[in-house]
Image 1: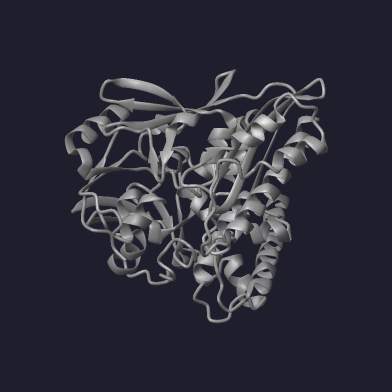
Image 2 (image 1 turned 120 degrees about the vertical axis):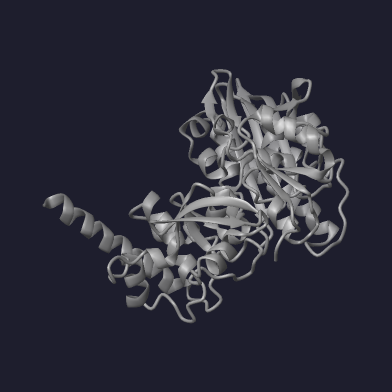
Length: 163
Length: 288
């Protein structure tokens, strides 16, 4: 066993893990955060996407020991005080999900995308979400959701700047 | 899917990693981003008893401009290489090729050294290494040595790396005035790996092709230069006719088989098409 220290959604955890433990299993089984999904388990579908030190990664292809010392954000960490993150709200408002299985990964990828590029074009959104697959063929509304959230987040930022 | 059990060792320096490699020998594998290694471990194609994590050695991911060469540390992540102003302005072919790897999430973890050392015959970076005439710095128990990319890829998933050695740095020569480059890739629609990928780096002087290197990935047992294309172009006037004549030689030295990715005739055809496209774009880029 190897001891790791990680911050998950702002809360510190110290745990002994088998070195072969994948980050997604650590989150789901050791911490009970089941919002991160296991889809293909072969680094293709992106359902397991979380933020590691601010960047989207496929947690089925990261060892928990690789995250030692890192800051992780999962879908459970996006809402604050019961208020949905603008991307969560936008996915709901624009019908950006059908079955919802890909949605946590899709949203965390989009958080990473908007952090690097706050007003992406439609093409940039499609390329930015290339690592996330939706089997309900819902890409059209997913792109709309990201555009909607980008708009909301830009409005929020300018309101703060105007204070 | 879990990998088989292993012991984990976080190396704090290259020296420490080399000492661990010497200690555990063939039972050990180096871990950087893990995006080639972890998938094969999950499938149990590989079951090393020891993983030596070199992803925590800070100096090993640096990107610097050394004037004649750009130096990229082995554990620089693809996303950082593709976004690096040094790479984008000084060796744009490397930035272009790196942006084709996997998807944004893969590029956030995968490393330049990991991809090159893994040497998948359909990976993108090896074609760029060959076209750029890059060199690879290998550290070993008796010091470091530098190997040209031309001599590095030796067979299917096989490189010049010897037991006990690790790749520490990629050295990429900065192309001179009048240079142009391009990467044209036909990705497998499921895996994203190249069915064919053609990387071209050329230089035009006084209307003639002064130098050209063409790196191919996907269509052979290992990445290789297309010598027939290069020799058809070298010294000729930079023209559409020259490109057409050179592209016709894209299959020289290659043998194609029918398989799930296509027939032999199809592969020969796409080799020619992608060589032509890459040459056209590289030549246009050389004109500024």
